[in-house]
Amino acid sequence: MRKAIPRSRGMLRVILVRATTAALIVGSSAGHVAASDGAGWTAAVNLEAATGSADSLNTSALEGCPSQSRNGLDLYFASNRPGGYGNLDIYVSHRPTTGAPWGPPQNLGPTINTAGREFCPTPTRDGHGLLFVSDGRSDTCGGSDIYISWQDPTGWETPRDLGCQVNSAADEASPFLLPDDHGGEMLYFSSNRGGGFDQSDSGAVSGDWDIYMASVTGNQVAPATLVPGVNTKYDDVRPNLRRDGLELFFDSNRPGGCGSYDIWTATRSANTAAWSDPADLPCTVNSSAADMRASISWDGTTLIFGSARAGGEGSSDLWMSTRPPVFGN
Image 1 (cartoon, rainbow, N blue to C red):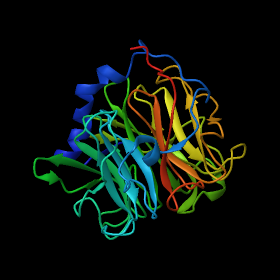
Image 2: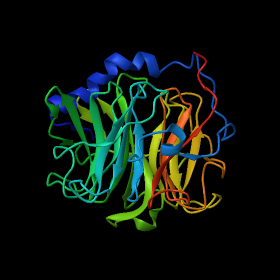
Image 3: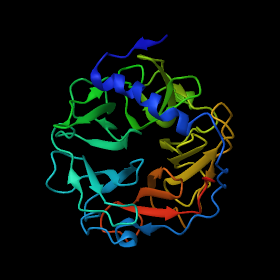
């Protein structure tokens, strides 16, 4: 059963984004080539050192959950560095061109951040909105919920909970909105709600992490369902997709990885096709430590993710790997 999304300026804009972007990114395979099963990625490097960025990009605290804007000029991420509003806050770093270093990160302020945890930010395709996760608010379905906020000339608007068709009494993470082939959108995210792929936790509030999707049409959102073909009885969490919807990145602690949580990828030939069997990215990208919440750039060449591997400044740093272009134009 579909449930009406609360009508608001911010929530309706989620739907209106489709009208200006869908023709560019979904429904056509022209001009792109399929990604490989992990070949071609460079060895991961610390993002701060690799780009000559501000020395405050990574700190002795935790940095993770990065996500890049469509134009490549904004990098959103979560950090528990000193000077924030709570446990985890969302920050953004800017740069003037895609070849320039990232500038000093800026806290998004108290409209977005609370005394609780704000994390897994994902900018909308038009660059004016932000999907993120929070457990520091009262209008919640339980645990950490997915919210959306929009920028206007005065700053960020009050975030709106996406509602209990998507959110649950357990935790949600890593929202990603993708236009579909039917005039609507598909929201991808992960959740540790009970009754997921591993039915042993049926009836429980929480269980292992799985990847879900929820169809959004007009001002209606359908109940969330498991994404077929990518989940296991282990944790499968924090999805991020390529701009055309044909490549999926997520992290998992399933067997066969390089250690702890690894970044895995799956591909498909069309938005209505089945996903390939997920493949682990090479151990030159992954490590024996936790490698998590990878986001792919709009041009498909740059993967930025959080990692707890040795050689960083804190408990988790931002790292990157690149590959040759996957789009023909």
